[in-house]
Image 1 (tube, rainbow, N blue to C red):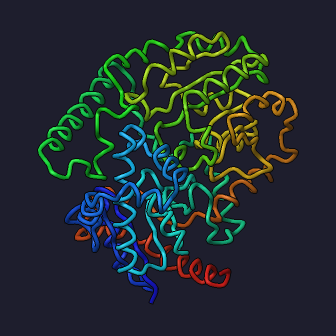
Image 2: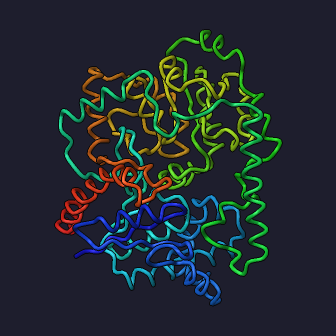
Image 3: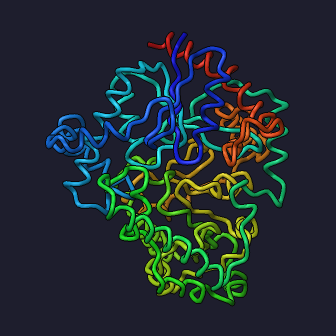
Length: 462
């Protein structure tokens, strides 16, 4: 039987172990970088290889100077660390992963989306060994998960017409919102200080633990360091005061075709750090400013709204820069994205779900490289230099002649890589409880139905 290796992150090991135990086409093994979790743990080998003294040289020998620079640039933790330490961590991790793969001999790696250097390195090692590496996350389609490689869809099935029609109907509801933003709460100073205080205490605890622990660069916890460049500070509470209370009157003063809705995304975020191919798109704030300046020069008014889950994590500098532009309005956090999609003729985002929702609504949707974006239904901007020409592209854009057929095409593309299953069943998973086990069954069925087909099709293509 083939061997499928599931790579688990914090709080998900029991869930992955249960999925591994339920595979009927392969032997399932859980790999982890958390001590005491998983069938194979990377952390001791990571420290051992990192401390040998040649970890930097190993990193460069495996990935080259440019490859290492890219791994560092894409990782929210490594890009804030000293370069030599970052190289040592890459070198230690690549050797630990290689040793694990030598022993486990996986035919397939399955994990969540790549969101830090550990899984980035793991995918590169797997690719070099011709081992497929699938990322799984929640789909825009309700009650489904989606599979991809670095933000590009992996086609697993041919969805039926009935399934596509049902999905189109659900997604086109006026109150539709992705699962992860439906529970966004009200925004206030109290909430900001609650979020800030929680993460400040967590970061302080980690700093204390790190100072007393010999393994002071534990790979799973580096993201908690308060010294990382993206961490919020007390002075960032002013973001609440930067939004325009008269945003509605400003919106009404602009004609529909000159209104641009720019929905900010979570930052840092896997969907930008690891899905955007052009490295010059990674400086998030500079890209946003370039869009707004170029659009303003062309006579468009951009209405910028932050992601609801970014509240308490957004640094003030970007909003300060945007507030100085005459044709930019900062919209309050609690304004629904659907309202702005409806009221604006153009949507701009990197990879966020707003781009998909805007295209479904028949708006001109400007995106970078999200998994859902087909060539014919979106306006693609894939590099920083292409932003300069976005106004010309907007003038040439034409809405679809048949919006219903366009919607079906967009959803069919998405549904081909989506299968039944609830991604969030990993939260508080307990296999002892029948109701919780039952909630995972749709995903178990999907893994057993579609992954064998995927492995077989891959064998044929090799």
